Length: 348
Image (cartoon, rainbow, N blue to C red):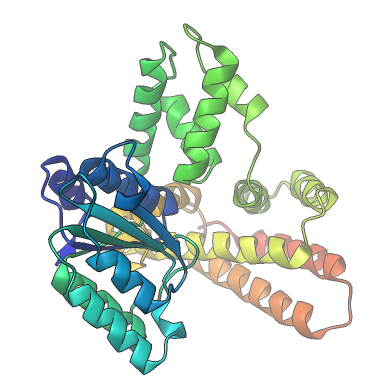
């Protein structure tokens, strides 16, 4: 069966554990979180080695079968975690053997396949067959993140448990600063809590002081400066990124992504589509819905033609970087200059 995150969570809490799980998605933090919940529910917080086995990549199928068939010691079940199994690297014989193993997992074993190191392509034949087998024998769950507001709520609750205060608005600000990456949210929240201590208050000023900007955050500020006609600010941000030794091609890629967000947001706004609906239609994970919501506000006064031209300029620059002998820094500076020229007719 295919489970939503909510159903997976409810089943684990209710003790409804499947024999087989396949957990994957764009949010590795959630994959690890729910794997840990399954382990805690099945073998406890301090399982003996015989009852808790962790394997990596594509383990030998004979070895895996031995672990699957082995009986638990002084317990009802044993749990096996296999991380980053990749069916596309298997030949037909090995894949068939894995499928057979999945189909025959006994009631005394819980077999959990987790994918955190890459994004499996469900459309590829071998991967599709593997996931189908896991879903038939147990449960498959894609974990692509949770909405920004819920992440912010978790930050507030985590801080409150330690007697620390952070407002909902500042929690939302923190999530944006780390692009709703759950791993970074957890790490940065812990760092901020350690800094202010019990009874302290996490303010926006403290967040700015302790939480570094990610590339996409800086590039969004760069794009906003360009769209607002703030030439000095835009080139200052670009110089700062260069000073951090970030490759121009990486900066360009982030800029292209940001302007695609703007273009999609404008299309959605013009057709009366809500941000949540647009995010779903464009394939954004839940923890990225806020991007379109923010972009819709940013493009409200911008012309669609201007945004279409920005995407074209960045696309041409990408081609030039890959084929021209001209220095990449020069090319990206030229692109920013062209974006300002295009911006002379930016407003509706």
